[in-house]
Length: 291
Image (cartoon, rainbow, N blue to C red; front, side, top):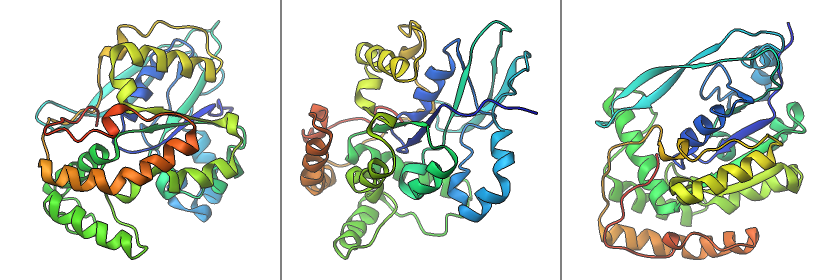
């Protein structure tokens, strides 16, 4: 049996709007989904990947199949409770398709050489979000997981306690669970050394979350993936996997803004472009945008 090989891979970062971006892409008439929302296949290690690569290819649509594709989409309701939505994507016998996946722990947790070994020509997509907001959303996600009874392997405390402890950990050259994934440049450099420049696109969650800028993002994504034009005007108004709003204290926000200031500057210099204005402001109240 022959399967479509993935043309694109949303590799990260977590809590940056990647769920919305993937659903927007799947809405394109020339894009078919992976059977799983987040296979996290490459995060299972080189030996596992080598032994089970055939199972990975089988997650993608069959080349000659014409029946609709159904898959389960994990989603949060307005109370933050997880449920599963069935998504059905139709196929046409006369249509040319591409496919891809979104396992957003890949950027932070996976050696890019492992991905390149099996997907040498893949087009990678990254979403970055205000690092303070991303860390806050990530922490809230782990709090929900802990409340659900999941075994995380560590204790989740209140946000201030956990991130202040992580700052001290990072000062010692170690990594933590919440702030470390928000230090984007440290992770980005190995990927840019492994893949060609034209194989990596970086977007900002703040742009995707804005209806007007979101359309521009999706137009650029279409061009990047060599897809015919599709009007995303109505689609980008919808958000997926969005947790209920919550605020952090202005004191801890300012501490974290100071912590990320130089790191954000280095990222902007590396990318050769300005970061969203909200990354440098220290508002008294700023709700999360996308989860």
